[in-house]
Length: 83
Image (cartoon, rainbow, N blue to C red; front, side, top):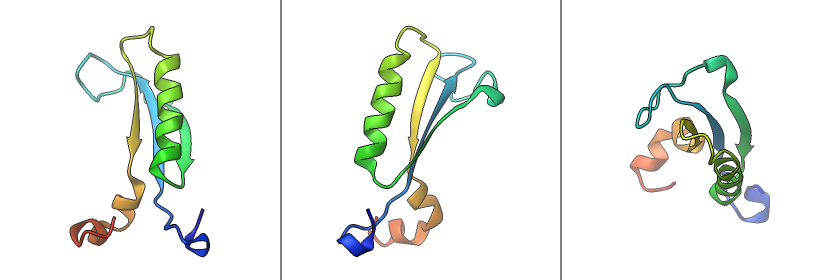
């Protein structure tokens, strides 16, 4: 997916790991983080996040996150309503 096919690439990172305690975002072991991947749009990132989150449902301390990389790479776009 790219601007060539009419859709702007909006990169998203999906990753997860075991948290030190429920309700925090501090990871128990940074070396054990599960980097699922970088995705070209939110929908594909959400699909990957959901699969990983459902697969780890038995571990209450395991959490997966979607990071909007495109907002970090181009913070001015968000400020002007372009993201």
